[in-house]
Length: 391
Length: 165
Image 1: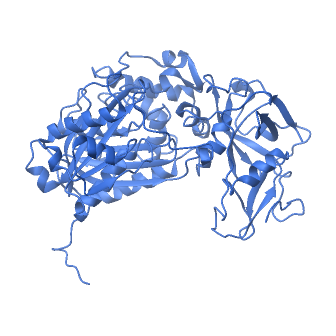
Image 2 (image 1 turned 30 degrees about the vertical axis):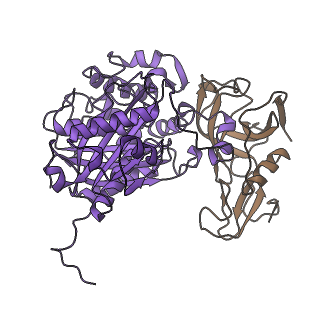
Image 3 (image 1 turned 120 degrees about the vertical axis):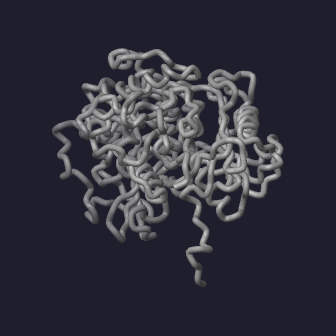
């Protein structure tokens, strides 16, 4: 079979596919009025309104948490494409990658990706998927490593130790991101803090104090993806997907191939840059999933934005803060803005706001944004490169 | 066999439920032995349990009793233990066995303070009863009995006891 360049599809990257609609639930934080499924529906309807579309325009649905069948049924979509990939907080980033493949292949035309969690109010929770016979049920839970702060945090001391870093470096992450949160009226934690404040906050799980751990909130968000051609005819400025990558290691934190560096992050980010045809220096804005304060440190190094051991000084020197040369987690991050449980959707929402020029803490002139998500602690990772212009 | 019985009297809500693939590990713990799989093809130990080698994918594997000696890779000291865990060590740790594999466990036999828990601290296995369950946990190694690297059950030695085929 011969395929000429002129007829070969451009592939799923390089701006073939675009975000045509994006929205969060109308309110985030404390939502005892709404179930998990209700949060998905609210976010979906807000994103459809943002795109100027109706449920009848959608033919693909992806979600994690509830079944995509429930989301499709309750939003009112008749799907011909479904994706229930559930790899934790980066699931929604993976859905974007999978939707781009589906749209490019002709398996779907307009894809709705929804997130919603009642992390704080615990209303209408989907069932727990894991049991005492699962790998974590056998090899982590019996040791009291159950909630995220009891296991996602465990490798951090090794990361710090290998680099001659310490708790102050975790605190600097919070200090820097609080400067962004202070500019964001929707952020839960908006008060500026200093390193000493963060270190002196009540201890949750040494070396992590309370401020180094995300709050647990209610909320949701949704995206509408379609071809760049279709997006050009819709009401909002398209945000193009230039590149993507995803990978995984193990659902057991103890089985990380290297506790001081996450292999799935390195692979996912490397593929995202390669497929986008860009390098770190081409990126104007960065979102790194931050359920806990060590993740921006791991993330900066594992995605190659800084070298080994440079993450702490990079943040402490102010490069990720307002006015810095690489703005990071400009909504305040999961640590300060909101964290429903699977935060990845909110990281993408902020990237899209920045690329549309409508963020609360808008960075001037953002053309490219890199979003890096973690899933099921150090189990999975997904990276996406977005831009507001087609290359 | 060093089995502590601090938690034995109380029911334990998070007892592991073995599967056929993991049962030798848990049977070993009940017998006071740390049993880990080893590949006969590439001569490496591996964890977590599966029927084939994690490193080279060979199905020619065996269960072996390992030395129980390890080092402290990383940890947290949990100040907000999950329900049912107040009676147990709050030190949730990654430990690397001298034979290579890394496990999640608890550090016992030491006050749970950072100054007592330097990374790379030498450890040795203990077995702790929690309700009906018996878990491998780790304690700082007694200096006179632990010689780093020399104590490992070495590949192919007569000390490597095959527990199940």
